[in-house]
Length: 485
Ligand SMILES: Cc1cc2nc3c(=O)[nH]c(=O)nc-3n(C[C@H](O)[C@H](O)[C@H](O)COP(=O)(O)OP(=O)(O)OC[C@H]3O[C@@H](n4cnc5c(N)ncnc54)[C@H](O)[C@@H]3O)c2cc1C
Image 1 (cartoon, rainbow, N blue to C red):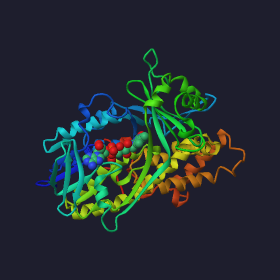
Image 2 (cartoon, helix red, strand yellow):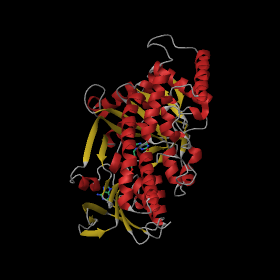
Image 3 (spheres, rainbow, N blue to C red):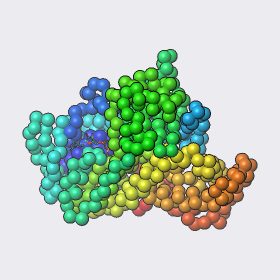
Image 4 (cartoon, protein in one colour):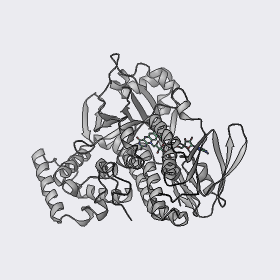
């Protein structure tokens, strides 16, 4: 496809989303220059930051499939089929994320970024330039003003500039100086700290590697995702100030005691907790909302630069990849006419960005508090039973977000309507819960209503739901799944 033939695209940021977008644009005939302020990740020794891992799911896999990288990346991932909950007394329980065979996947951020950089470099039309910080933009040319590591400034002209430069985007910073550009940045009152849980002395995983581990404690929580090297990356989320906060935990032995009191089984697996606590930073979490995602036919924002979300739905990267795919597909649909495509991209993506922002904020409450709430668990069980009974006619909210490509906005509205519908059958708050047989019978009855069309319209599949299937569709050519026009 040659919609970019003879055109120059500048991609700002060689992170996850920028390197993927560079490959996609190069394959459409664009000459692409990628500008990254950091050095080349592949040449940096050590952890280059932190050995953080991320949950990859259907939307991210679908975007990787669009450039033929899905299988190579999936081979490096570890499937997590559900949540393994750790109660304070050490009791373990398991909540599947979806149906048998469905899982989210733990992927190394670094390995994934390296794979994408290799793919970008393999495209003859892509030039990767590291140590190049974009300082400013001339929006009308358009052009970027870059400062190299040597301090020298350079102006680079382009036909199209993509801002894939993350949550504190310089490209967005320039757009914010334009009239009628909306922007909102909210810091969460919680921060996070990562801790590495090493394999056992025998070289095995110290916990079940087939799950995402959660220690829900209502106002704060610890999570753990498995790594290929059999370690786990643990992340503590807690308030900066007040009760049960990082400020309360303090430093040194006091912090270790604070942690051990709240997460005794995890503390027992972290002999170097004290040292890690001192060494590893506590970082902030923010969410970004802006509008529009473009300036004329010349500049567009994708990924965290456009829609950074808090990490509690495991969707930030997945949404970033999906945005890269949708932007390029929108360019395809307009034969490369950026004046038409970029406004169309904002129009199709804005409601989705707002939806995943809200879902991610809400899911923090679900992860740290609701997962231990009996009524919430009952509804989840009914949802899964119903999904098993009704098949394509019913998927609960989590599955719509995680295991489908349905636009986030539709997933949110449909999923919430389904939750309210199910709640109506679970009796009043505090009433005796139905037993297993009654719950199964209820699921069969509701499945019948969904099949014969007598269920309320708000909970039945919209047309858009058809074909937005799970990972089975991930390997299909881009555009195969049906989405909002
Ligand atoms: C603790 C935590 C856990 C997370 N877990 C998950 C998860 O499980 N699943 C998930 O899907 N998402 C997760 N996310 C979100 C995910 O990390 C982001 O959504 C994703 O990295 C966004 O990719 P991006 O390419 O838009 O931005 P980034 O990955 O931030 O890349 C931006 C790039 O731009 C470069 N850059 C910045 N400014 C400039 C400049 N001026 N000039 C040149 N280059 C510049 C940066 O150096 C960087 O390389 C998590 C985030 C956090 C903080």
